[in-house]
Image 1 (cartoon, one colour):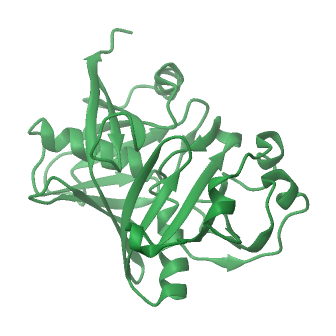
Image 2 (cartoon, rainbow, N blue to C red):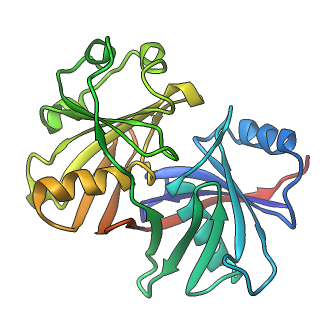
Length: 269
């Protein structure tokens, strides 16, 4: 079977967020899926298989980190949709059924893809003991996110604070169910983005995830409420970076970006 590595939320190779993509006829046992994800050793590997026509979705989709399965992943969904469209397996809008419900990805003429994901709820919570020390930065506010995400959304003082983070990953791994999203307003919106973020998931074997689509289902409502606009652009990343265009539509959030296939080969095991 074919396996591909796709850089998501970028239009250039070796940037954005890489994901493995494996198209199957059906899902094998969970142990095999986890072994492949560990071998690929990226933040997520997506596994998908086609569904019979006439249902609510076209493909079944699962995402696994090197150590665990997750309920929602944006960049690996974008990567999967990119593979389906570039290989002729799909056109227009493709629908996926996953742990978090039915999702869709729609291709535009310019090559970009728009994901339709559920909008995360945001609940203000006290900062966990030791959070500021683990991040090495002053914390302005903390919000809990929806169940399928399970991250803490942490607002920092400014863009420079986000970009300069060097967290204590062992300490961060104890702070939330899944990970920690750090964010701040853009220092200069004239650079083409409205807010910045970095995401850390050491409890899932991922110290830092470069461009996290699922996090933007929480970042979109957070910053749309602050900035008074439903359409925004987020810049995410440390060593690798990418852009996510967000459109808030009530209970749904649209995430738009590009993707590039960088590796394609045969999975022999």
